[in-house]
Image 1 (cartoon, helix red, strand yellow):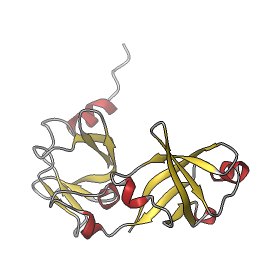
Image 2 (cartoon, one colour; image 1 turned 135 degrees about the horizontal axis):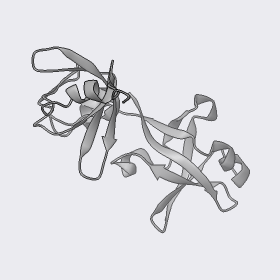
Image 3 (cartoon, one colour; image 1 turned 120 degrees about the vertical axis):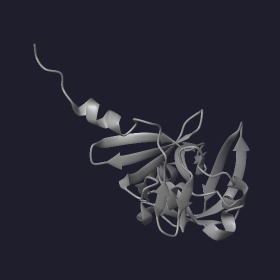
Image 4 (cartoon, helix red, strand yellow; image 1 turned 135 degrees about the vertical axis):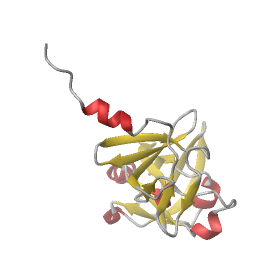
Length: 179
């Protein structure tokens, strides 16, 4: 599966180096000399890493396909994608990539469909599931208490949301009477 592992930032210097916004927990396994990365948009790649260096905590990459500052500026904001073997990646049974979860049906413990998972937000306190429902978006903390079961094969996530959470959508859509 192709996963986003980084984003090309601004050019650094005049020799075709780019700052990289890292979007992976394993940068040393994704970014190495000779690695070929796919891109989004696809027409900008693939790109082959020619040089890697650290500049005060910021990763700088030089690509064989971009030999100067102007070429890098044309690649700015391009997403870098790597082919990832999901089964090999998971070190623990309950590890998932966000891309595996997006689009999963969200159901309650009685198997009633509540909505569809649209995103996993990485907030400072904990991750949060963003769920699209017919009545609006609901955010549920991504903790075992509220998310007891994930079935990647069936594209299904079982949740036990806090009491009243989905009912709040009904009251939020009600408008007070004009007096």
